[in-house]
Length: 223
Image (cartoon, rainbow, N blue to C red; front, top):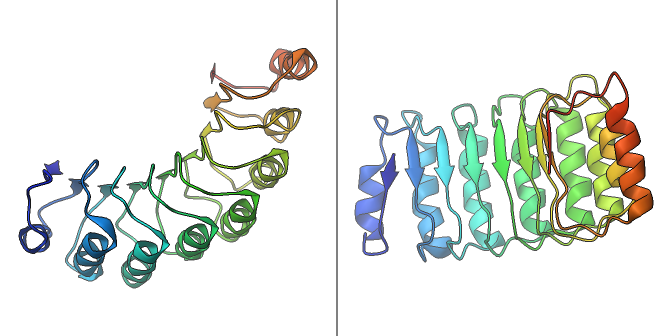
């Protein structure tokens, strides 16, 4: 994996990202939107084979998402794993990311948007994108965003699609309550569901426990 330190220059960064690299981790560097624009120039290159892109805590805003979206629209088929957690992304950024996810050539399997500023409005556009192209995403983490029961319901409605292949779903640490049950009841899950640090009372826990007892529930790991 290519991993740059904060001292790497943007110019060297742009020159280093070519077809022989498949993984790039620039997490915890203050590259900002200007750094994302340089990375996006490389991602547009048809010879670029980047499969894993991690930009956690990089001071990226929705403006940076514009450049990234443009690049992935031009060359959407190679990226498999993207982590934009702990950046200053809002519902506007979520709309841009959703536009990429709608592309039938998009093969993104893992998407982490942990601890951004996404609300239920962002979940509406995300849900719409996943309905258009439901068969590629395997892991989605929206934890520590500003979601409520309404946003969780949007996601659970997508999961009901028989073509949806989502296996790991992170929804921890925000104020969801009884809607957590809908995630379990929407269809049999086959992997991991994270609901830690939510406002679940005894009645909600009882409902979830009842669902887990059902023979068609295939949740392998619940946190």
